[in-house]
Amino acid sequence: MRKLNAAFAAAVAIAAMSSFAPPAAAAIEYPWCVEFGGGEDGGSGRNCGFVSYEQCMLTARGMGGSCAQNLFYLDQVAKQRQSPRKRPRND
Image (cartoon, rainbow, N blue to C red; front, side, top):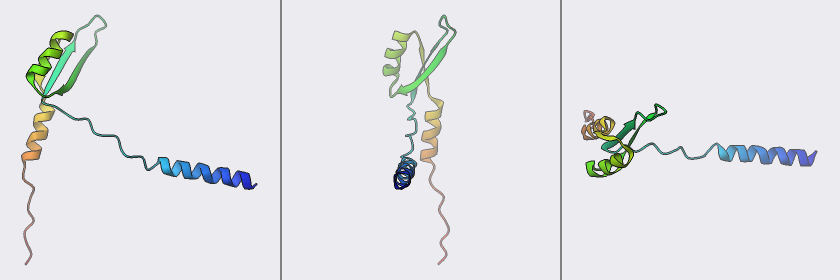
């Protein structure tokens, strides 16, 4: 019976520790995306991991794709530029 209780306690401890795992990092958006597709299998894709147009084009040429600005990145920049609202002071 003691072995069963010890095993149960160990299982509960392991389950509790694994529930405190850090959350996965959010995907980082960059300003340029490679858009490719139209292959034989009909698949397409998008990779928004490029910091410059030149870097994007080097990848796009090798994959037969094209580059476009990442609109989600532009939205992120606009949100970051908004100044936070200031609360009125109650003096």
